[in-house]
Length: 146
Image 1 (spheres, rainbow, N blue to C red):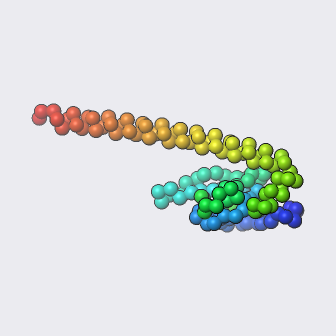
Image 2: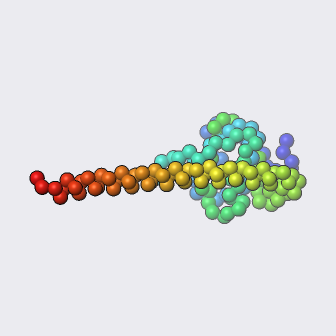
Image 3: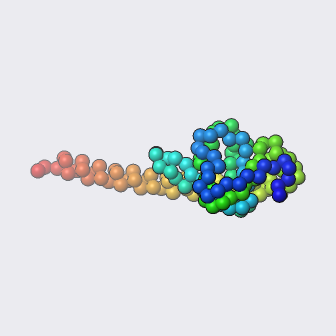
């Protein structure tokens, strides 16, 4: 059972925990089960992350008042602990190692995102080079005599 300052919630498979664009005022820790987080990009749903027992998500809502950046759905029956901003401070005071765990996980996420950005930049560069090659050939053929 969660301490009384924490809010434990249960979700069935397919339940939406929050939707992209929703206001957010809490983060979640997965007690049991698994969730997936997705984002709409160019009209398509893109996978961002899967979180299981012991993982946390939604912490950006406690640090930034922007709407939710993605949609979170329970993949299996799931139990979560919801933590609001003030409750997070209490949890950090009671369990300082949680702060370190949060920083470590956030650091891993940043590293992963940096890798993804590098891959996107590489793909963009390759696409531009291919386009330049194609355009260069078509101009050559267009300008050459019959």
